[in-house]
Amino acid sequence: MSPLLQIKPEDLFVDYSLDSAALGARPMVKRHLADLRGSFSDGSAYEAALAQGNPLIYEVTAVEPANGDGQLHYGLGIIQPGRIGDEYHLTKGHYHSHRAAAEIYIGLRGEGAMVLEDETTGETRLVPLVANSVVYVPGHTAHRTVNTGAEPLVYLGVYPSNAGHDYGAIAEKNFRNVVIATASGPALVERSAHLAGRPTR
Image (cartoon, rainbow, N blue to C red; front, side, top):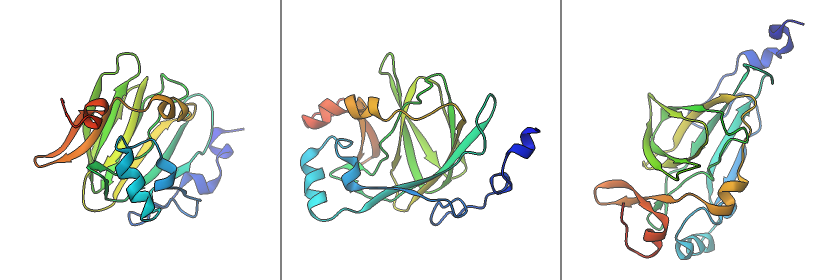
């Protein structure tokens, strides 16, 4: 059968919303503050915020038209603005299960950044993700999205159908660096130094 005929018509054309980050009528995965335990380095600030409620932090929706060599999947995400202590709202972050798979992120609305961490060396980059921008995520790179602005951050991610998502590796050791608010803007600091109150980067 033709590859074109194997894809459902509703997967060939999908409308989306910049207000809700919905992709048509597809279900959205919602992550509340309680779902992000361990993601923020400041445990005391996290527990204090959680004691005040369990707000929605981010939502993602995916379209997976087909699997197989050369096929693509994509997802739309929205992160609400805010901070836990001096750390910005963020996603859990992940590697790809197929480590060699790369991904592109397209900023659609708001101001944010991506934390990119090489799996082998731990080398980290903080890359802006804003409206009308594209971020390239190489293979073998953990990536996390952060909302550094005052409005929802909306973005589109496009990745190979065989990429998969490995959240377990991040849950086990987390990212080496965190993004915090400073007087001069968002800054990337080492997690251990931030916990000690001694940012070094």
